[in-house]
Length: 474
Image (cartoon, rainbow, N blue to C red; front, side, top):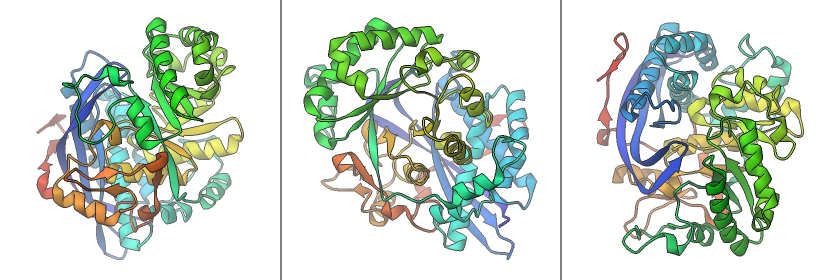
């Protein structure tokens, strides 16, 4: 079905962390969520609105110290500016054609404005979700129904010459939405691990877990994502402290290691892994490690083989998954997997998942998170990764942010009513994600549209307008 983008309303709202979160080169204590509401026109003359939301994240899309955090925010806003202009000018097209038909020009325009490919992809990623949400609401179809019936018109194009159309069609038709998914808890580089790491003055005391010990007792989850910083001695010491907590409190667990581009070359991460395997106190953690995520800086990651590491554990790309051609390139260098992140675009995730399905055993896609806040953002991400067959997903904001504390009381109650299996609100606290036993229920996401099912409170947000021609946001 062809649609036409009529208008885009843009909003922002601040959020504050309950706990500091350090990944890569930044420690996050708060931020901004970008929210959009689009209106599309259908061929029969009807129009419908759809929404999407995503954090403006500093020092992930663009890690260069040349830019301040505020400049990073403006780069992402500018990416959205450009995408809005391209989609509106494109006219009536299938939702996927809006994405694929403007992809190269979005990247070219971004490059001319010094926006790297990840930044340039941010704007279309938001627009594509909101457009599909509007289409689902107009037609009464859920996200899973739209994808399995291929209502967006997803096709193999010259952008993905390695993908066969018949295989892609069969892949989409064979997808099934899972009723639940397991939570993978992230242990950041400055997270307190035991009670001794958190003084009484430092404690938040909001009823949620603050240390890794408390997280394990509170959620009883099986999956953990462990950040490493690139300094072997520091990393080994911290991993041993983490292993002490997990080994003593869980009968069974699985871990992943995230290098967040902290290594200059494969030799550095191989050396760390060798030391991990040689340390008796890390024996169980080493056996439990499923894969290693993006250890090498993106500037070098796709110019050297990771076979020396891959012979020990599978390696995936994350930040290096900047373009539609990135995953095929990574495969030639020994990588076995790629991450799914809605901030990189859900069409990219679907296309990469179809590649994984064709490749077969030994290749995989992982469900990773950035700062996906509860509400629309987390729901659309959960709907995507569960449909693509992933059984566990990294979730950050449920821990580092106090639920939907950034949203108005009206919006929080609306989402709790619509998704009682996903959120709870009690004792005066904000609406919080449920994950008893480390498992998240997804049944309520099967609503018309892209897994939203509740009204956002736009009156409580700050409207934002932009000047595309000058590249200056106002």
